[in-house]
Image (tube, rainbow, N blue to C red; front, side, top):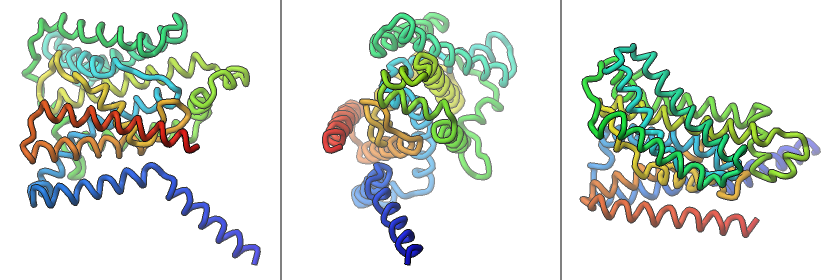
Length: 326
């Protein structure tokens, strides 16, 4: 009887966890959106080509959102990711075309540039004690200005096919960006759930002062998550440059808002201490499906931006309501 009681208790616990999961809510939203779009635009939405295009497109946002999620879990914010996205893509393309470096070396340099910007953000926030909003707003301008400065505002093209594979290729019939997103999601999920540093990320976001008193190196954790966020923005920017076949200083404008929205829609709290890796991916999927649906319904790009803004406000509002209930 005891075993049966424990079994029932475990089942109840699992059911409660599923009910309270924000991921379940996101999945329901995705299913509802897909149904509505199928009714609105017919088979165009459910065509294989369109679905692959949607998944490929939102994978770039999702990669960036995974890094943003780590920052938001600590109670921070990073407004520089869109500019770092552009800068890393431009630097990578320039390394191949102007400096004649190999694809591997160029991608490595691009990733290091993103990591460096993230590291600077972490230093400004922890050592200069700047608010995350101000620190990352500053680096956002620096990264964007450098992107324009080194390119003169001109796109950088004539990229090798081996580089374009990152954005346009397939691995086992799955688009490379989606494979990249899945691999990175697994790595970050392991980091957050299974490592001491990952648990410290949640501790810092839950109660920074208590974490500091308990001996957690709060500054080191903040520098780490901002560095990882910069790296993920760089990876997304490099993959996008590979997909488009060109590095552009104008790339990634407004992407910081998309990344933040994806994280909040995915269930993370702007107050910190809450979040997981699957959430930003589902949030990015919702954003991607929404954008694709608006395009298929011939909605102007200007109105699309307005709709995304409304979604961000609603997501943050729901987050506040969720926190009040708790």
